[in-house]
Image 1 (tube, one colour):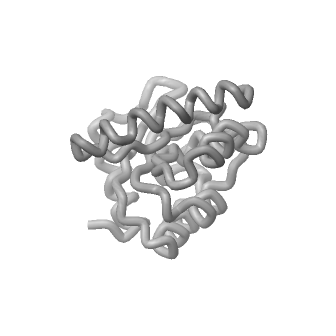
Image 2 (cartoon, helix red, strand yellow; image 1 turned 180 degrees about the horizontal axis):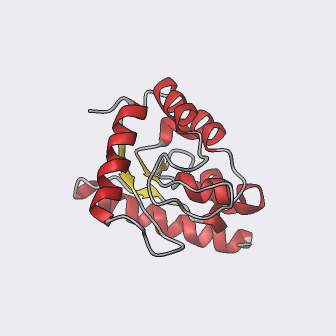
Image 3 (cartoon, helix red, strand yellow; image 1 turned 120 degrees about the vertical axis):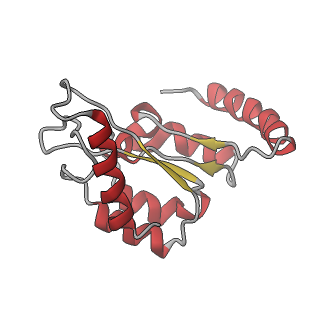
Length: 154
């Protein structure tokens, strides 16, 4: 876990980067992997304590893998979210070939996003523990179709 001094240094650097991004029309947002949200979200909470209004771009699957409920996360931090990664996994914790073929409750996630009036962007991110069975083009197409339907996005 990062020390308080390391979290201070991280926040100092982010506070220097944010205006540069703003000058170029870029919205800086924090993306997480597992370690930023493990240990009761020590790293992320430490950053938010120092920069409360920083924008977030969570990876929903890394939240799940760290034991953080993505619906809770969206309900808690959804107003700060401007971006997110969408990926799925099975009950065995292995990534599924397509979004929607695993155990992630995307319908509940979609409802939480709607409740928070999420208007940011999302990326479907496929990852494979084993070589894919189907052509990846089909996996993307099926994942996109599922996301559009489930999240009611055009």
